[in-house]
Amino acid sequence: MKLRTTAVRALATVAGTTLVATGLAVTPAAAQTLVPCSPAALASAITAANATGGTLILAPGCVYALSTPLPSIQNSINILGNGATLTRAGSAPAFRILTVDASGKLSLHLATVSNGDATGDFGGGIRNDGTLNVVHSAIRNNRADFSGGIGGNTGSTTRIIQSIISGNSVTRNGGGLANDGDMTIAQSSITHNKALEKGGGVANDATLKILQSEIRNNEASGPSGVGGGVANFGGAGAVTTLAESRVSDNTATNAPGGIYNDSGSVALLLSAVNNNQPTNCAGSPTPVPGCLG
Image (cartoon, rainbow, N blue to C red; front, side, top):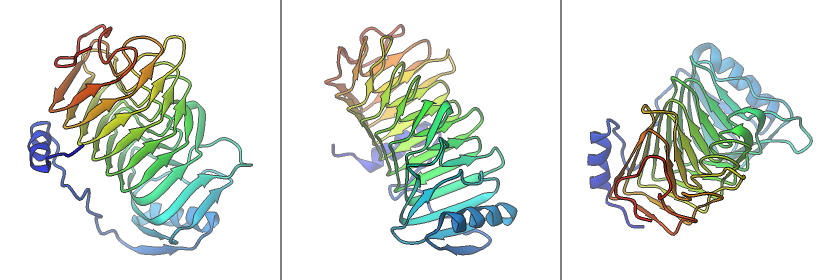
């Protein structure tokens, strides 16, 4: 889908968010640390950066196969991935890959986060209780009860720019992403995620902006599944805005398969919702203006 950057910039400004087409710039931190291709070295580097903040430069292409959880992010830390992968080792017990505490600010660039497992909890790949920027990265094949890929908790700020959210799953809501805070998704792809209840791609009950992005081939497949693409629920405070985006080819057990809106509001600005099954938006308790079928 060809997208007009100038239009989205204007729409983003109206929505109260300023984004540039190239994503988020890395803010210089107190120190730079080269992290060898070793899970222990990565854990030690995060612990050290939690004291003063810093930038961690990962070994190019390294697979950091973790046997234990990484320390939570408690300060301002940039992780420059250089194409590295942060993954839970196949023989390891269940744990999520990254946790951002309320005091933490994490900027993750050019990295893949995979195989996190927060079964019984929130945020299989990354749980954000503070501030999180994910840029040019992939969040793949993580699982949880809520928010298989990334979970933005109450009071958090999450920005996902030019990234891929794919193959994540949950037993409840938000197969790819779930938001209880302030989340913006821009120029990103949310595909092939799965929830059993609401929001195969994204579940929102706070403030969500989706700009220049696609949400497709996600599913809400349980007996009560609705909103294969997007689910907006949790009361009048749940507000989802889509600008120059597409929600297509998503499925749900029950209508609607594209966007489910409970009692909040969903705005479609130059966006398309089509080819979802069994319906695009029809069947939502609260209609989605501008969505047909």
